[in-house]
Image (tube, rainbow, N blue to C red; front, side, top):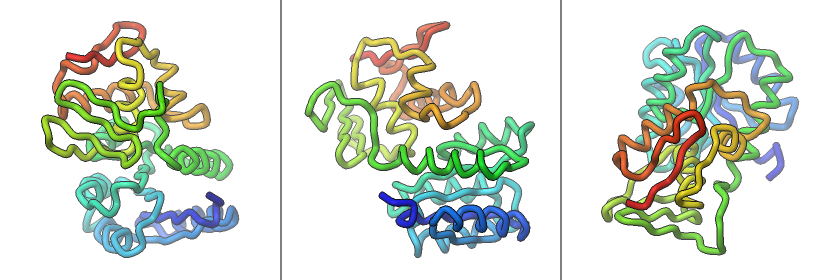
Length: 232
């Protein structure tokens, strides 16, 4: 997929930031849409179905956290990446963003080259979903759990469980080799990629979200090393 095929929605209540980011993205060939608050962002996203939504956290009418949570409820936007713009010191906002279903965050102040590099890396890794597969099988079946790599769906106890993109990639990676201990470095590289810088607690937040949905029996923490998928 070429850069010109990607559609990006920028959401911020500061016109200067929207203009600055839009200019840099359009120079790279991306199609850029803009919104000034969360409510407007949801309306535009439903109509335009962007590949990437970049949300500021603090906005009037509906903030970025609320908007992300609402976006994650919409089936037509299940394939969209959601990334937050946060100040470097806003750890709370970053964790709240992951809880709401965000895939990543970009810290302010924004440096154009780093910003564009991160956007490119995120979009590259979104096409197609890419957890490693140990065989030609597109479906992994376990006790109560079925992971379909082709259509990006997970069923648990017969019920469909909707997962944000990064949670799906993380679960698929761990499940691709049951009993193998994946180090934190391996997980960062294969789920987020070398070009994407994420916080130290990013993996932990995503693991916690998976455990909330599937229980504690499937993913084991190997202290000081990483994580392991267990077949109960």
